Length: 396
Image 1 (cartoon, rainbow, N blue to C red):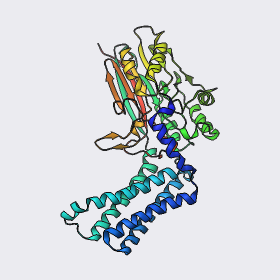
Image 2: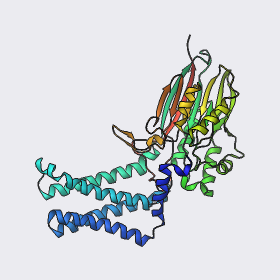
Image 3: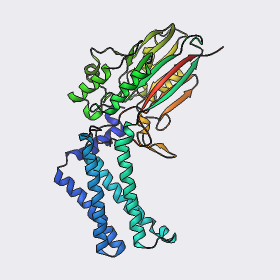
Image 4: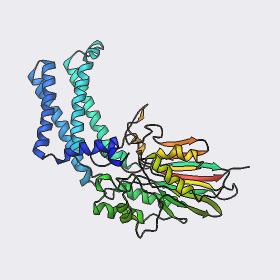
């Protein structure tokens, strides 16, 4: 499956055509949605004044959405297109009206028969959606969290100091924001033995944007660790070879592609493998075999791969630890359900967190940034994450 064949990629490209709409046509679409909301309420209330009031309230919330989304780049928070998300919010708001109308019989049985009660419920839903939108756009994308992952193995000496590895993934840089600055400050405070980067350094909307490349390169250049910084490429459309070259050439970062290195960290030896991401599991397995071809036993094996889709092959080959990203943890998660979408061939099987199959442990980080093209620049119940991995020898 090529990058263009991925359902999410196709959907984002199609919806991204909304960014090509002229402003007058955009306004016309939004006005049509406002008019529809007003007509629905006029028919339900059998009162044109109620319909007019409902339409004006709907318009007020749409304008508020527009102002919020337009302000995000000016505030230096995110830099996605306004039009697709604005239309999606307006359609969703209209859907709330329709859904509530369908629930009116149940509301009436509960004593909510008056028109005032029904209008108040619609207003509450609109306000709730606005608060969630503000939180998802402005607050959570910059609420950086850290996860501690401890892996105990008999392939390392219990008497030696533990190895501390910082994993950073899915930067998706558009421009340097306070999130990237906080990541750099945190990496410096943590002082890990080595830093590993598991792909997707630029936002898909900015892969060939010189300012984004310059900013991403500036961030990457400030990552340092005593035993090195190591990176692998991410998704093919996000990290094509020419972009990887532009980002990493001249930096003190080792980029691994279907190969392995033997690292000695204070007398502890690990085999670090890096495989270039492919959306074909068969191609990824071949890359893993090439990286494993020089592995001497019985060293601890750490595999860097952008997507968790390599887990079945890694487990079959006895890799000890896999560090991956790609899913963003769903980026938007729902209570009791989790990730809405993961862009993994295995769906929700490896959506985020720690997994173990046989002797192989994998951690899938939620990553740092957000999807590009027409995707809204939001995180909800899924804050950005850095992972501090501690490798310890197993006590006898």
